[in-house]
Image (cartoon, rainbow, N blue to C red; front, top):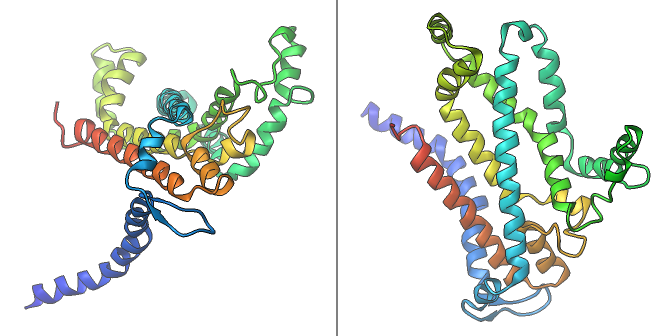
Length: 293
C-alpha cells in the first residue's frame, strides 16, 4: 500500500512538469504540423492544400541554400566549438596552467552570456569596412590587400557570421569539457605517463575516451544550435546580401512575417524540427553511452 501511495505521490509531483511539456512543446509541434497543410495568412482564412507547401519547399532553391548554410554552420561549429573547446579544456587542466584557470575560464566563458542582439551589433561594427577593427588591424600590419567588406559580400557573409558564433560559444563548450575532465581519475594519467606516453598520446588515449559522453552532449547541443540559429544572422545581415547568408530560421521568419505565408513557414519549421530530431536520434543511437565498442 505504501508503494502504491509513493507512486501516486511521485506521479502528482511529475504531473505539472509533464503538463507543461505537453502544452508548451508537444502540442505546438503537432499544431504546427497541422497548419503546414494549409495556405493561410494572418488576415485570411485557412485553405486546406494537402502537401503542396512541402512540394513547393523541396523545389525552392532558397530552401536548399538555407539548408546548405545551416549544414556549413554545423560542420564548422563541431570543428571549433567541440574540437577546440576540448583542446582548450585539456590545456587548462595541465598543472602548469591550472593556477591561471579561473582567469581563462572567465575570459572564455564571458562571450556566451552576452545578449545575441548585442553580439550581432558589436560584430557589425567590428566587421565594418570603414571603421571596423578587422580591416584596421589588417592595414596596420601591412595586409591591407586582405581588407574586405566581410558582411557585404555574398562570398564571406555566412563565414563571418559563423566565426562570431565560434567566438561566443567555444568557451561555454570548453567549460562543459572542463567539468568532464576533472572527473577523470588521476590514476589513469599517472599510469599513462609511467608507460612513457607523451601529452598528445595521453590526450587521445585517456582524455578523449573518458569524456566520450560529454563529446556526444556537446556535439548534439552544437548541431541543434546550428540548425536553429536565427538571432545573429538576422541582426547582422537579415539573410543578405541577397540571400547569401539565409538560414532556415531566417527563411521561416521571412516567409511568415514579411511574405505573410504562414502555412509555408509552418512547413519550414517542421523541416527544422525533423532535421534536429533525426540528428539527435542518430547521435544517441550510434555514439551514446549504451553503444559499447
